[in-house]
Length: 287
Image 1 (cartoon, rainbow, N blue to C red):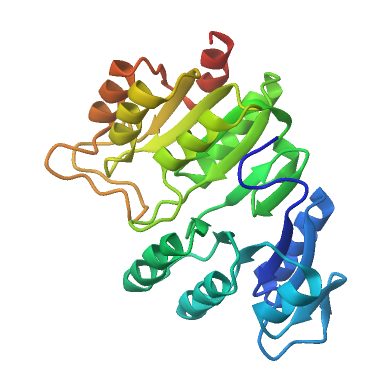
Image 2 (spheres, rainbow, N blue to C red):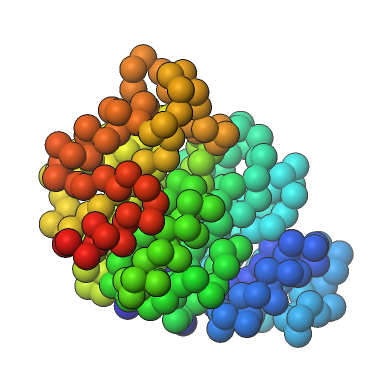
């Protein structure tokens, strides 16, 4: 079992004929993901890496029974691509695209929730359920099947932490890179709730960073709703006062969002916080 993405997921790739779409389609196929269709308007009837390309999502669903999408469409067209996927009835959409205009995300994100559609991203590495399926751009070889659920605001930090976990023989049930934009789909709280319900997930890793209040809210949620062991890492603990991370969502204001406030919140919830990314494996060994 895993959350959101399993070996049964039938994925379509929006923007499959672009450089990024083509490259990562090959990588996802190599991992074993069931990539059943691609969508690029005007390119219907062609193939990319053996995957049939359609002009629109509705045709791709009708012909190939796709039930999830990954979006590599350039930022100016990303909103229309996501809305097309929502209106076609897809229940999982992974938006890799970065630099999507704030107001575009503000338009499609609430709409997705009214339609019962789960969005991961935008500006994220995606999601992987090791040994089953990958809808994202993460390096496959560092992941291993296991019982640790991972939710992260940072892509590259996820890779470093997961690599250390795998080397220490702590495999993963599902890893969700939620992205660092101000407006995102699945947030840390929602990911925690999914892992709490998932029987295959026995422990949880939260990777946060300075800016915003996601980690403080997660700590409060963990205290009230999560019974499984949780460990955390907060990026930016050594940043100078007033410094913020590169993510648009990493904004510190009114004393909230600092590394200190996040670490205190986690510790108050009984969540040990690693000093360095590689220390996550050591904390897991103590759970």
